[in-house]
Image 1: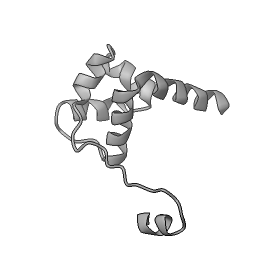
Image 2: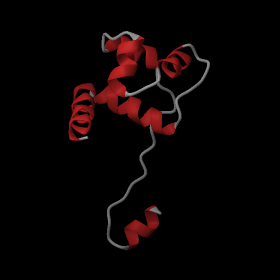
Image 3: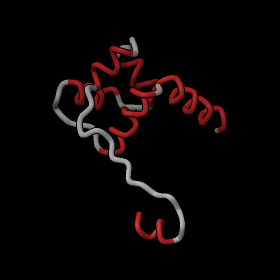
Image 4: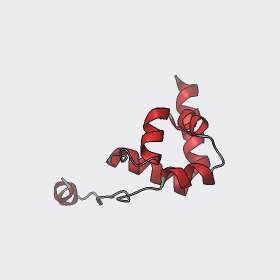
Length: 87
């Protein structure tokens, strides 16, 4: 797909999220409880707990979102707020 986009003149790149995310450290850095973090970012609190306790790992899409939160938490929350307001 990248090659096809490049062939038609579009600048394309594959962005890979980090392989692992320390979800608990991210949540704690944001100063949120598990319930608050889950609510703010539209996550199931039991899924969040499973990630933090190592019972499961975030999938690629979730790792991408968690990476975006780690880099720009305020912007992610604002974007989610705008999406909700537009509904």
